[in-house]
Length: 65
Image (cartoon, rainbow, N blue to C red; front, top):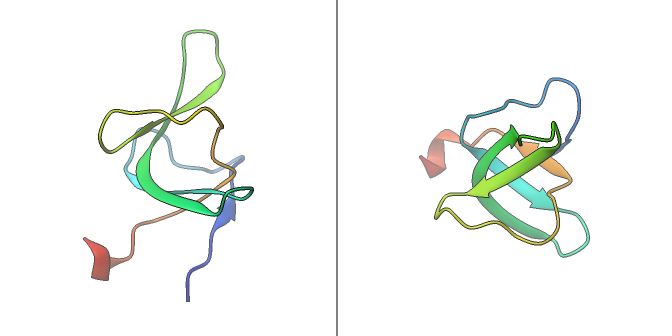
């Protein structure tokens, strides 16, 4: 069972995790970090960014590593 957690306090930063976009139901691995303005931003595994920020996250299950 896949269980995503809403992005907020305790979300890992600068670590590869699965990101989820609630509106589009998109899932992709990437990292979250703070930008120079102090806002939360994401970077996908291939260096790309989507226009919308992800809403949820989860650790990558061992089976997918």
